[in-house]
Image 1 (cartoon, rainbow, N blue to C red):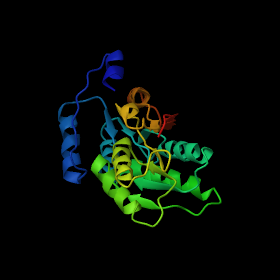
Image 2: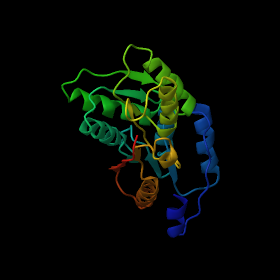
Image 3: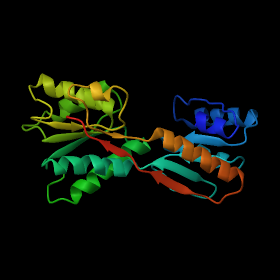
Length: 246
C-alpha cells in the first residue's frame, strides 16, 4: 500500500491494532483523524475492526481489506477470495485421488479462517464422500502441532490435511512425523499463504499464494476513487495454487 501511495504522491502513516477490542480500534481511528488524513485503509480480520471502519466511513473515505464482509452503506471492500483459495486446495487434493481431506482451521473469530473453512466444507459437500473432520487450530506452528495431535487421536489418520495457514502446516508435518507418518506418502498436506521459506519446508509445501501486492494496489485505487466521490464497491482478487511436493 505504501508503494502504491507513493506512486500517487501520497505519504502514509500506519498503526497496528494488537487486539480487536472496540476501545483499541477506536483509539487507532482517532489517531488517524487527529493527523488529518485524507483517507484510511483498514485491514479488518475481525468484526470489531470492520464495525469501527464502518463508523469511521461516516467521517472519512475508508476502504476495508477483508474477505468476510459484504459492502454496505459507505463501505468499500477489497479482498482476496479466501473461499476460492480453499476450493483450489481441496480440488488439488481431490485431483490427486484423496477423498478423506481433513481441515485444521484458524481461529473462528477471524474472517479469513471462517471463509477458508467454509470453502473447504462447501467443496467437500459437493462430493459423494462423507464430510471429513474439522479441528480448530490457530495461526502458529504450535497450534498446528496440537491440532494435529487431536486429529490423529482417532483410529485412522486422514488421507490429507488442508491447513488454514503455512505455519500450522509446519506443526502438522512435525506431528505426523512423530507418529511415523510420511508426507505425502501417508498423509498429504496443503497450506495457505505461501509464506517465505515454505518452499524450504520438508517436504516443500504445496500452498495457496495470496497476491498481497495486488490487494494493496487495489485498495489504494479504491480509496482514491472514494475520495473522488465514487459509489460503494466490492472486489475480490483470486489467489493462486502453488504446487510443490507435500
